[in-house]
Length: 172
Image (cartoon, rainbow, N blue to C red; front, side, top):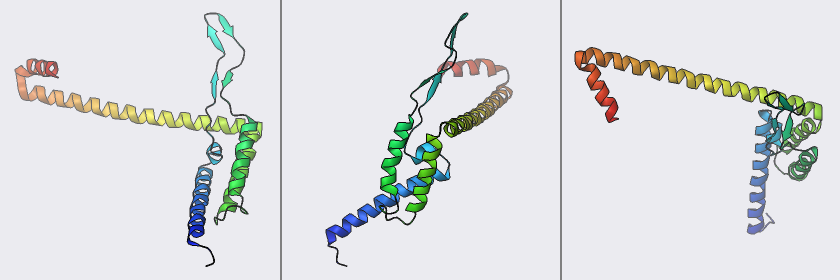
């Protein structure tokens, strides 16, 4: 009641911002995406060992664009300041802060991070394979239906089917 209209607007705006941040963290945490909880993207790429004819370059894969522990801790500290229950007035800030701590703990521990990355790669590969199966099924279905239409057209047109189909395909 003692706040001016401008201060009320600012407080409401901050409350919405806090709620948005908490919701984003909790949503990522619910799907067990630790990098997303911290607002990071894992663009890690492993290349190698390279083999060219009988020559092998390197013994183990070369990793490109791996997030360092320092980067992870820095992002954690930044978000922890924003989501800490004493600073963030959202009702679920404590829950979001706990999820943030858990994700940071997993990603800063090298063994746990390696295991988490392995599981995520496996999950992504399974997802890609499932999509490819679906695409393959759709292509097969379309192919079957096209052949059915061609057979039906041949039956209807009789001896004129081949020339008409050839002319039709040339026009397309």
